[in-house]
Length: 504
Image (cartoon, rainbow, N blue to C red; front, side, top):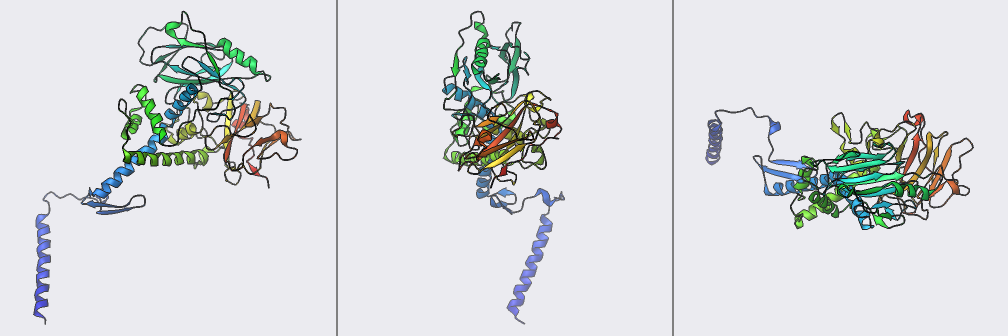
C-alpha cells in the first residue's frame, strides 16, 4: 500500500467531512424552504442577450450593461409604438402649417387631393378641409357649414367631437365653442361647448361633391365656415382660406430618430397631465420629459436609433401582415381592418386596451371617431384593406391583378378603390391624378351580370382601360375598398369582395 496516497485520501475524506459539518453548523437556524423558481442561477442562457452571469443573484457588470441596453431599447421601441398617435397628429398640424395654413386659417383641397400631398390614406372623391383648434390662450369658436362630416381629435389623436352629420349639429351647421378642460371662465350660451384635454386639436372635415360640382361644394364651405377666438366674437376677423390642392407637402410622422424629436415637441407644448401617467412615464424613461431638454448622449442616441427601427418594423408587421384572424373580414379572404375584432374608437374591449389595434389604426390612417367603428346600414362608409393577393404575397406594382366585386355591390351611394404607397401610406405616385377609381366615374363599366372587375397594374389590359388603376414597377402598394352607404349584405357578410388575382 502507498502510504503517501493513503494519507492524502484520509485527509481528503476528513476535509469533506469537516466541510459537511461546517455547512451543517453554518445553516441558518430559521431556514426557509426556498423554491427554485424564485432563485437565479449563476448563469442563464438567453437567445436574445446571450449568457447572463450572476454571483448568488447579483448581476455581473456585463449582465448589468446588457440589461440596461435591452431596457432602453425595449422602452424606445414601445415609445415609438405607443407614441405614434401623438407624432402623427403633430406631423399633420406641422405639415399644413408649413404649407401656409396658420392657426385660424382653413386649408381646403379645392381641386381634391392627389399624390403630391403626403397624407395617410386619404381619398380623392371628397373635399378635405383641415385646420388647427388651439385653446392654449382661451376658448375658440368654430362656425361649421351645412352638409359636412368629420372629427376633431386632440394632440394624442383621441376623439373630441364630430362636425356635421354625426356631430351635435346633425349636418345643419352651427357654432361650436372649444375650451381646455381646465378652463374656469364663464361660457356664453348658443354654442355646442366642447372641452379638450390638450391645447392643440385637429379637425379635418369633408365636404361632399354633388354632380361633380367642386366649385359649389367649396363655395358652401367658404360661406359657412369661420373660426376665431371667443374674445373676438363681437368683431370676428376675416376668414382666411388656403387652397392645398397640388401642393407638395408632408403630414406623415418620421420613422427614424427624428420621431422622438417630434414626440418631444408634443410633450413640451402640451399640459403635463394631457396624457396618461404610464404613457408620459414611458417617454420620460427614454429622456422625453416635460420641462427638460431632450439631449440623449451618444450611447442613448444609438440605442434609440435601433429602437425606432425595431418599432417601425413591428408597426409594419401589424399593419400589413396582421397575425390574428380577428382582423380579417372573412376566413377565406385577405380583406382586413383594425376595426373587425370587437373594439371601438377608443380601442377598448371589455376593459382591455387593444394595443395592436391602436398601432394598426394610427400607423395606417388618420382620424378617429365613433362613426368609423359603428357604421349603420345605408349611412357613412366602411373600409376593407388589401395588402396581399389571394396567395398571401404582397401586391407588386410591376404585376397585373384583377379584383371582382360580385353583383349587386352593397353600396347605396357608391364604392371606390384607392391605391396607396406602402412606404408613406399616402396615395401611390403614378401618372393618374386620382390614384383610384369609383363607381361614379363614367369610365367604370360593369360586367354583363352586374358585377365589376377592376384591374391593377403598370399598363392597362387591352379593352379594360376604363376599369384600370395604374401601379408602378418596383413599388409595393396596398388598396382600400370603400363602400359609401353600406347595405345589409356587407354587415351580415353574405356579400364578399374577391381577392386580388394575379393575371398571368
